[in-house]
Length: 172
Image 1 (cartoon, rainbow, N blue to C red):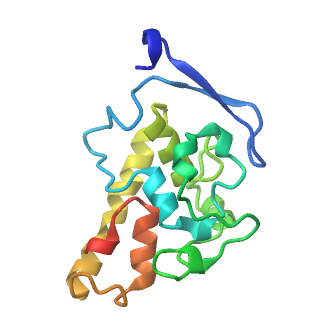
Image 2: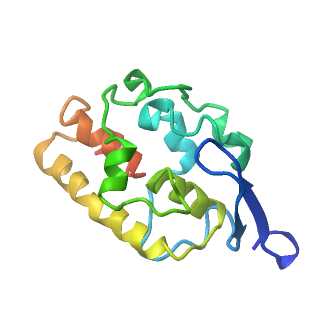
């Protein structure tokens, strides 16, 4: 729990969301649902250049400055060269919306939800997002089944997508 056992209010202001406020009711990086065990923190993911570096360029004030010290960022449009595996591995946000994967409170999708969850926000959408994260593990199983351990040239798109979901596919 944040200082003085009172929730801290965070307000996000960026191109996709103005004046959205939420409470941090858990300690950062702690008190996760027992079904949710990400292998990477948001800061680690940003260092690995997830989403071609363009994901968090306009909402830095909402999150700890330390997350951005070594972040690979590309204002404007994604740069696949910034991704750890050097490939594009994301569907457009419009496709996420079409499939109903976006909650109004997190218009950027899963990673925005994860960043806020990591910070200590607990939300009505947590169970659904954790289920989506668990379901993505099938891609890790495929990499382990079809690739030699540590071979970054085997299924690089799938490996990059796993990084986007906080699975550390560099060590598979």
